Image (cartoon, rainbow, N blue to C red):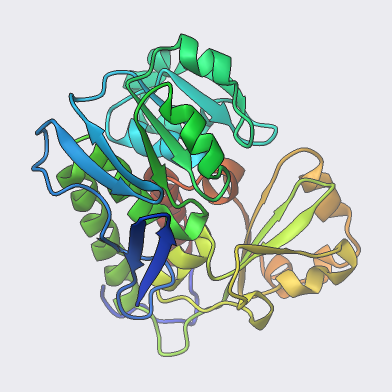
Length: 328
């Protein structure tokens, strides 16, 4: 259906952050926007071995036994845990979203019944502490991008806490950290190795001047283009694809008005909507004039996977969607 057409496919720093006495460094490899290596974080213990000490964004936590009842306070952490075969007992939900998105149910049908039992902890910026305590967790994952030291201190009175960095660009190192806390680091690394191998194989097939790809989302009330340091932006870079000049900014996203929708134009547009977003885009005066729309290269995608969640299975949905679309 969609394909590269005239394009011919040819074959397949360290960032240091200090919190109190702990230094958590995340290293990037080469020029990748999305860091791939944990430095001074995680656990030195072999997979499956407990007790284990885990260094994270807010210090160091000792886990005496393998966790059985975990709580996650981030959509990306929910995705990561389920990808590792562990369904949390409690989680927060994304904005205007269910506890677990449809793409996770499709990817892991064997866990649907268990996912339906996950307790809703409310908003990720202020989860229900009373309910968290009632669930008797033996490990809590929180997200430094949303919750700060005081919340870590409060949660630590309930159960051991491991803190990931957060934000879509850090999904790889956050996945590795979460996996190492659960004694499954090797499994997470194998996932990432295959992810990178598949991205590299696609990138090796691109022409010298690869097509540009725009990432666009709209809820109706808010329309945004995504930057290089977003989940999708990092994945497009892994794939060797270019971005329109308007989206080569070094942050997650920028809001645009529908009157400036031409900032979302590119050879391809991958757009996701929820709420009244689809109606807003389709009714925008500039929408039919965008070159990607006129060429039938505006592709509606899964909003949850591309723009709301930041875990490994969401990333795999993004990778596979882009590869399949541009290879047809």
